[in-house]
Image (tube, rainbow, N blue to C red; front, side):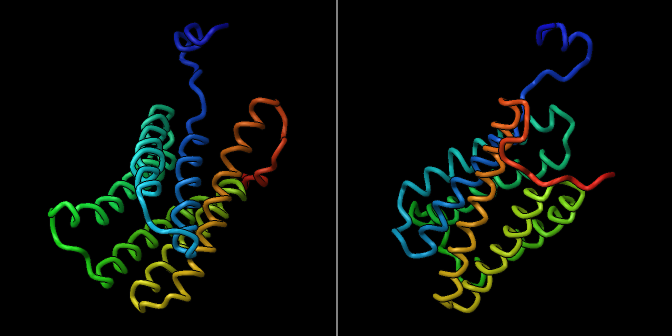
Length: 198
């Protein structure tokens, strides 16, 4: 039975968009936090990843999750895709003469709000697999650390946030690759942790 026949019968034959969204989020998060950890400057490489892979790829994944009827995936991927676009906007727009550069206090509250939003999504993952729980739990911590770093101006906190962010991003890349390889091989190649029974 091909995909057209499945579609006619009302069976979802579309691919899993989650690995695309997770990879877009994960790779971009790792690269930004390598900068936060002090390894290199914040240049066009990170900004381009924020627009195109962290941003647009996650929005596409979110729209695909909507088509599959997945409210959690739709909300998470679309929101974080737009997070990356707003973050790039906050960094680039003042340099283009479009508004003033934000104060550290403003950035702290921006990051805090994303942390609160992520915490509520983390609560949703408690009914999902361990890999997703780790991603959203570590992302909640990352946003809080970045918020504290901007509020206090502490280089040590920002550097620690960078290291924690690398771990968070890497966990998303792992989860994306696990979903792809497990589907391709038809068995568990990379474990995701047993989801909680509903």
